[in-house]
Length: 332
Ligand SMILES: Nc1nc2c(c(=O)[nH]1)N[C@H]1C(S)=C(S)[C@@H](COP(=O)(O)O)O[C@H]1N2
Ligand SMILES: [Mo]
Image 1 (cartoon, rainbow, N blue to C red):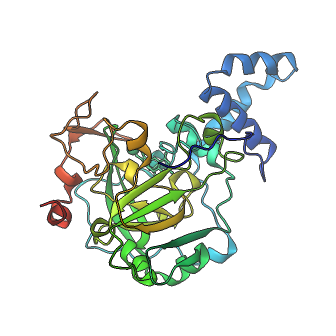
Image 2 (image 1 turned 120 degrees about the horizontal axis):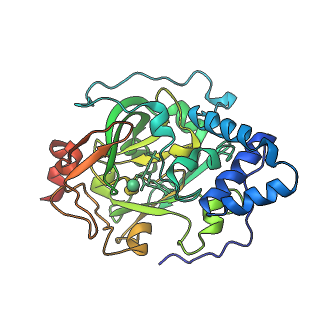
């Protein structure tokens, strides 16, 4: 079991924020904690109550625009060529819909509020430590990864265990390309991935201290080197916005979304099956394997159908999320 760290302090992410961002973050924070009423009273008594309607409009505007990180080092990288082998049988999800409906508990459990709370979270510079049972452990700089790895765009379905789904154009490279660089030993049977731990900047990590931060996930080696498993650095022809897991996240589209860990800082090759975040939090509900299985209900809801976000459509869920031919050999 990973050690449970108690955050020492928390604050609303303000580094590099404009006054409007700060205001927005406070409102989001108040809403996320159910303190909106109190906040309104406080604002009213300090004489700011009279402008309450305007910032609410600003808040809406701010969440309708997706903020893509654009450090100089990534200039000219996106968009990249699409790999037509990964086609979709359904429409792409609207970019703003996907970017304003996020699961990223480090910021908040309130999906529409993640983008605003994540805005300004520093994703550059960023390092990813890759080690464990490998011949060539190495700490990679994200700038080197996006410059040297074979980036391609793929259209993938995404199925959250909560029974909503989307289809998005990810940009990234096969996980296998990174694995090959570090030369895993034959004793490596699993690969474990870890997200950042910054409760001073990620208010959800600070406030929800009962979760075993940082977020951690894992795959078997065979899953990690599967053709579909991607390390993703971009979406919709841009660098990943923070809410989607900047600067680099995993995408394993035949598994429930919680396996696709965001904002990775560490990748470790190990011998035996490690614990994973959601399996530790609720072992009856979230399994290590977590393959999309329409016939296996969650203890509290059916997994037979999924809601396509941004539409009124409810469609049948497919085994392995429609990727049977790519992955079924892994599970015989
Ligand atoms: N670090 C981290 N990674 C995470 C999560 C999270 O809360 N923290 N949520 C997961 C879940 S449940 C889903 S459905 C997807 C959502 O990705 P999206 O916001 O890009 O759609 O991210 C996954 N990766
Ligand atoms: Mo999810």
